[in-house]
Every structure is written in structure tokens, then in C-alpha cells.
Image (cartoon, rainbow, N blue to C red; front, side, top):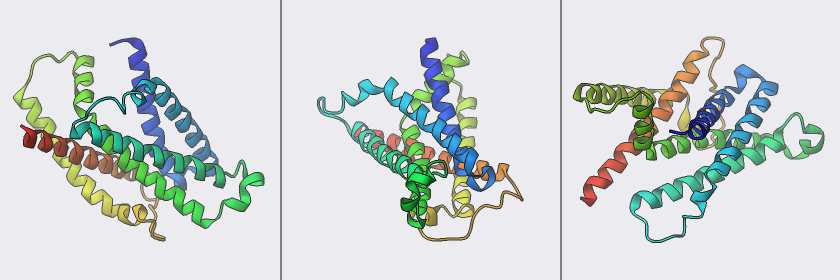
Length: 223
């Protein structure tokens, strides 16, 4: 793998990490939240610049179900990201002198809604690319031979993460956030900081797990 590809991969990992950090608004405070959000969007722009050729392939030829699903998920992720960006500008304290008339309660609710939808859609986006991610991981660690024990262990870990993700969805009230229901049930960062991030990662793992095995099921049906 080239150094440029590894650099791109590192930027993507950092952007995903910044998304998780950005979700912890009540722990970081507004200033750090805005800095983290700005850095994340800069990396997202870089990601799209690096992958700009993919957009030119959207209208080319017939596509299988996986390709069509990928296009739909990418479009949804783009919409959610743009919503997150626009609402970020409208509610920014840094720009409050210009944007304050537009940054009301509803806009903040939409901002939170978009943030959690980005988490879910991004997880699905990664789930679609999980075979590629595993190939990259094998290359990085020099793994060339299959191992039944390793495969079993990884599947067991994936199942545990998925089960934890179901529990985490209830712990973080994910359903209410994705439906933009008004709630005062926020994570108590004074009790645990790590717990919040573990729950977020588990939720992402759940949707990656569901997406990966849904694609495998579609592939088996086709065969």
C-alpha cells in the first residue's frame, strides 16, 4: 500500500474519531466542540476530494444491488453531513453576532438529529466497505493465510459488540434522538466519560455488523 493511501486512511480514521468526540458536547463545552467540528469537516472535504473520481462513476452502466445501496447510503450521508454543517454555522457561538437570529431551539434540535443520523449512516457506510477494511488490515499486519480460529474469534467479538450496541442504543436513547423527540435524558459525563464513547462505538459496531451480514445475505440469495 502506498504512503498516500495510508495517509488518506489515517485522515478518515481521525475524522471518525472527531465525530465521536463532537457528540460529547456536554463534556467538552462549546468552544472545543466547534473546533472539533471544524476540523472534522475539513477532513470530510479532503475525503471527498480524494474520492472525487467515484462520483463520476455513479451514472455508468448497470449496477448490482450492493452498488445501488452504496449510492443511496452515500447520498444520505451527504445530506446528513450538509445538514450538520448548515446547522453548525447557524448555531455557532463564534458567528453568533451574524447568525443569532437563526440559531434557535429548533435548529439545535435538527443539529443533534443530524449528528446521530451521521453516526448511524456512517456505520452503514463502513459496513458496506468491511471486506475492503479487512483486506487492508490483513495487509498491514502481514496476514496471508486463513485461520478458522481467528475467524471464529473475530465473529464472536462482532456478535458481542452488536449485542452491546443494542443495549447502548437504549442507554443513549438513540431512538428518541433519531426521531428528534425532545428529551432531557442526556448522558451524565460526571459519572463516566469512557462509557459514553464505548456506547457510541458499540452502536456504530451494531450497524456495521447488520450491514455486513445483510450484504452477505443478499449475495447468497443472488447465488
